[in-house]
Picture 1 (cartoon, rainbow, N blue to C red):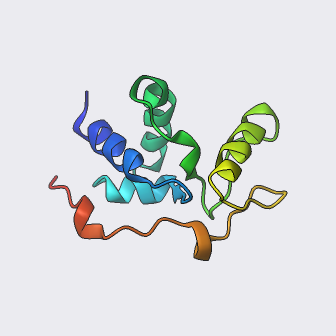
Picture 2 (picture 1 turned 30 degrees about the vertical axis):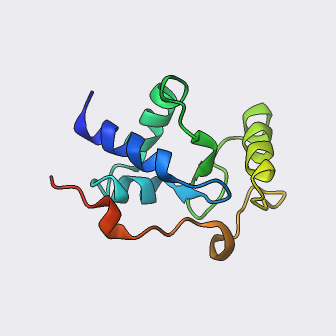
Length: 110
């Protein structure tokens, strides 16, 4: 498994219940600020096998990125069950629910 994938898994696992992180934020905290699309790949390929809280990762600007339908509704339900308030269009208020960890806890050497 690639080093970035392992770091991204660690970062995603660290997102606490009741908080969300953006794909770009996970990429930055995992040591590759321009790898937001790689975070999507990690979520698609590793969420089930690694038990990742995939529903806590959202698009920018703090909005559910999945298209309307079953997946959107499922992510909305999971976030709501953790106390995250989501508007009808999938937007989440970053001031209240965006995860803001100490960057030093996620410093990775290249």
